[in-house]
Image (cartoon, rainbow, N blue to C red; front, side, top):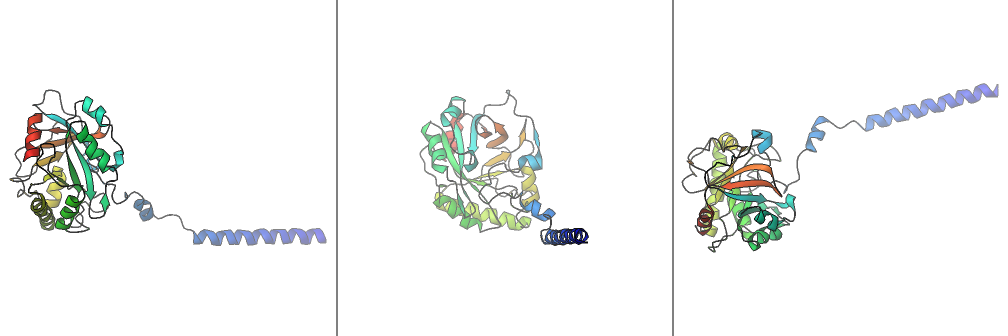
Length: 276
């Protein structure tokens, strides 16, 4: 019965193929939830001011037009690329900060266009460092910052450097540090920055992060100006020790570049901060 034998052989071949496919499926398991979560971690170097504000603090309105005299500013980093500085100047922006560095491993490839471009249209400008306390010491990062765009000169157009210290986009919110260890790390950065430049750095942070990760430490308020992050109609409660903010990042969805800020005073006060 040749037809019968041929049908039997065909069924055996199909069975063998099915067995092989099943075996291969066991060798290629579906991605685990931890692997999927890992894909949500951004690349090192991509952090920027306010990256975690909406996720942790949300957003609730924008400042009202009846506020006291304030001066509009922006902050930018590599993720914005080349910035249309003339457009921002024409819209009333008068000061800007550019991300220079992160940790001791990253420099902003757009730094020259952003830092010099803002200056060339007439803005008073400065640079900031995104701190990563889990990678190297505060002093080492201050040196890296100063060596890669974070310097200062008394020319009336250069603002003091900023330490951006906020939620860790790459892991645990407080970078694996206790509150006292975090205060020590910040203090190390600030002391070294002043030793290198003669200026007290500005601290950019959010009240909720500062409370969680430093225990609402008040010891830096007497020397270091505060740049508060809160996307709302008012800056809200400030960290301990500071009776007022110097700058306020109030949105990440403003015109042209997204991140917009208010300086707490008229343009002459921005110049005063630049001059020290």
